[in-house]
Length: 317
Image 1 (tube, helix red, strand yellow):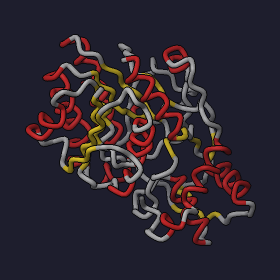
Image 2 (cartoon, helix red, strand yellow; image 1 turned 30 degrees about the horizontal axis):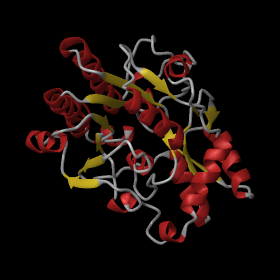
Image 3 (spheres, rainbow, N blue to C red; image 1 turned 90 degrees about the vertical axis):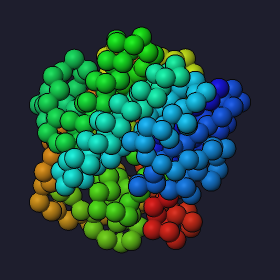
Image 4 (cartoon, helix red, strand yellow; image 1 turned 135 degrees about the vertical axis):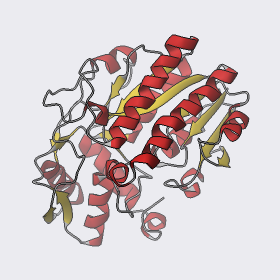
């Protein structure tokens, strides 16, 4: 079985490739990544073939997809803040890039899983957020991800393709970079704590998120590919637990066995207030997968950040 992973050198992709490398039924793993946010070092313990390039390159996509049985499409401009700074760049990769990946999959008859995001819900006051809610993105990133999942579902309807669109909720874990301006909150918190710096919280810290450990996401992705799971609607991938940023800071302090100082900054444009997922559809489609709890996920992530090879390289692998 040949599996193509776009964005496979990024943090979710690296965790996925590590697990795929352990499966004897997967004979060939090919990663396509432009290394704009990923790192080749993330793939050192895998058996992947790596191709550096962009999902916007139609010719290259055709080459890497040749003979593929499935594609897991993770390549993206992954930040809300980055999308506010560069809306067109975010659209090109997240929307147009997804369309080109789907076209390449269609050409070879490959099953396709597309990574979408909880940002498609926007700042809806309703919680938990179920897949039937209206989608009202409040950032270009959210709009691009909504377009990506819509294209994925439309290819199933129009071309009888086998597809699945997954809405990830605040994924964190090993390999997630912390050394750039758009770093996600958990790696940024851990990096600051290990340096002895205050944790920076944008806004009052009462905003909530549904933090989902990478291992949970990878389990869903692998099960989806192995069984070719399909759905005519998007599917939330989350823990189903709502945690404020202040609670996250306290939980991280408990994991690190010391209180952590918090420093507040002005709120950021495009950030949503509250987010928690309904996981009923996820449990129905993937009944054997249980999410990893926040305390366990934080412990494993901190342990990874504390490795000498990580700390010595800006913790960016």
